[in-house]
Length: 115
Image 1 (cartoon, rainbow, N blue to C red):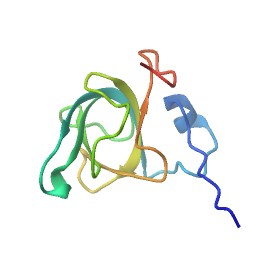
Image 2 (cartoon, rainbow, N blue to C red; image 1 turned 30 degrees about the horizontal axis):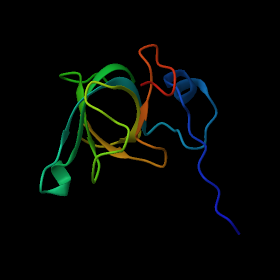
Image 3 (cartoon, rainbow, N blue to C red; image 1 turned 180 degrees about the horizontal axis):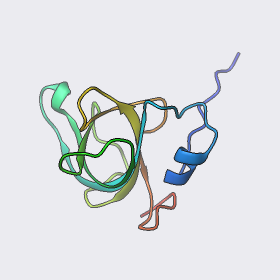
């Protein structure tokens, strides 16, 4: 049997209001701008700093989240608008990847495939 790929939302509104098995109450949903990729030697400190513009869930102290990932993603650049989909943690500003791609390029209006 061939495994099926998860069906993931492509926009903030789809993630919040759509019917996706891949999005639940523990899913962090936001749009924002990539600040930088932190290429730390320790994988617990390696990932992206994202300036959050719009989010679903608790208010953040400084408006920035850290998405912990093992390495940079092709097609994601500093200053780029992105849709962020990940798993919340017990630390307000730490997000972990979930079943969906954690960063998806969007345009300034939040539509998929931003440049």
